[in-house]
Length: 231
Image (cartoon, rainbow, N blue to C red; front, side, top):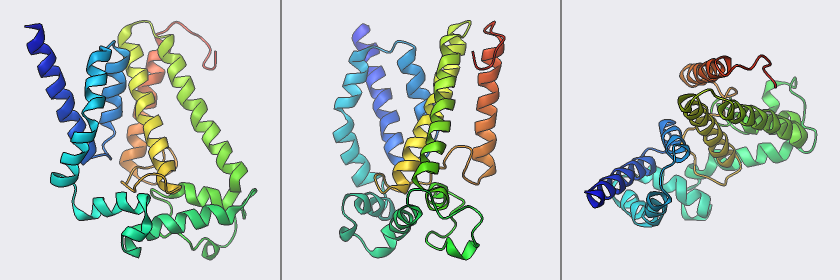
């Protein structure tokens, strides 16, 4: 019976992994996996799933990913392998970040001077930040987002019950993974998959979901018995 449970668990994890590879822009995956990890999922299952990543990636590449998604991945590995259009936005984003230098060109410059990335207010908002406020401003934004993530984890550690802990860890996973993927996209380290930068990119659904998640985290904090928000 225990062997059957293990088989079912591994098959379920493989299915989730294939879904994650095929639809990497869905925010529910980091929430689910981070909650499972904190809930005490056995390392045997975790290592089993990690061992299945290479064959799962091969299956996803051959059966789930279309040519556009494949080109986005190849553009990160070697832009010369794909046509210019597949890596154009990412390359322009890197140019915009480099153009900002250390201190940036100023956030109140004429809009025409920010001409490197079209529709910059969406997924590539970080490239505008890098151009407008430079390396120093970009680091400041990342520090603020990191502080938010750390505070969410601290609230989880102080939660009155396991449910509150799992909620905080899930929200942390959702926000942290979005930040990592978005910054990786803008720096040309990860393929472009349409993940927004939390609280900064345009998008009503994304922003609304994030604020709802933060509201739930604050609810966990209120029921933890603490009376100081930054304690």
